[in-house]
Image (tube, rainbow, N blue to C red; front, side):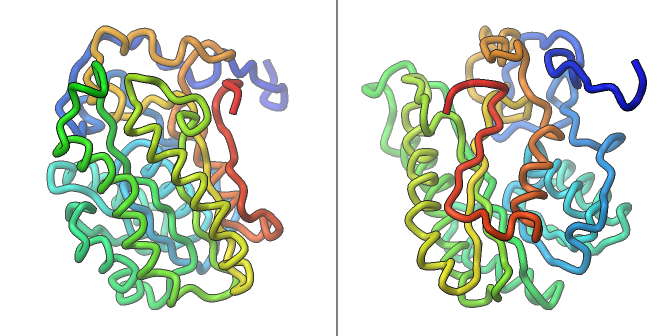
Amino acid sequence: MNASDPQDPRGARVTGTIPPQDLEAPGTTRETEPRPDHGESTYEGHGRLTGRAALITGGDSGIGRAVALAFAREGADVAITAMPEEAQDAAEATAAISEAGTRAAHFEGDLRDEDFAASLPGRTLEEFGKLDILVLNAAYQQARDGIDTVSSEEFDRVIRTNLYSQFWTLRAAVPHLQPGASIIITSSVQAAQPSAGLFDYAMTKAAQAALVKALAPELGSKGIRINAVAPGPVWTPLIPSTGWPEHVPEFGKDSPLGRPAQPAELAPAYVLLASDEASYISGAVVPVTGGKPF
């Protein structure tokens, strides 16, 4: 096959068989087998985000890390957040940003803490002098055996991580965003095709999609765009730490393309939505699902 020939998407970025594994949340890249592909050896930037500053929650691993790497290679300064348990992943992610020739920042803390979540836009402004792109990506999910088995504490963890934290960070960011800024939320195919075993996670993902559509008119009047990306099955540390070890080897095989995505395959959608090439895209939920209906 010549370099110019199109690639069969069924075999793209396949990294081999996924073995059974059960990680403790939040899970880390070094524990995930095979190691997710964030685009380290493949993503090439073209200056689409030169001179801009981005904040990405959960940018230490998975989709967030792939987006951070892509943004940096497109010329943006990038700040990421991570839990203390994810310090090694965060260090690797910030090193990759720096290697791309842009500035990196890492804010360590728990997004369920209102003070921490609300501080992030201001801290990004202190680091870079501006905030042009906000990616609300961090999330938590766990497999459920039934709604009657879920404690209020566990339900609260999902809601606070996936919804409250985004509200706190977004509320703090909007007064500082200038015309041309872009907000991107990581939703999920679960917003449209919810699974009983992830009912609480699916609730939050549907709410995120609703938030994007609700805020697009308000923010559009300020010259700010807001969109979401709705991934299908993506191979990240979130998956083996969800609590379904027996299902991990089959993960993503039910998609029309017959495999899960790699995080690197999600990053171009975020780059598009962050760039001026998407200047008329706002209020959209962009599915990247491998053909799963959304």
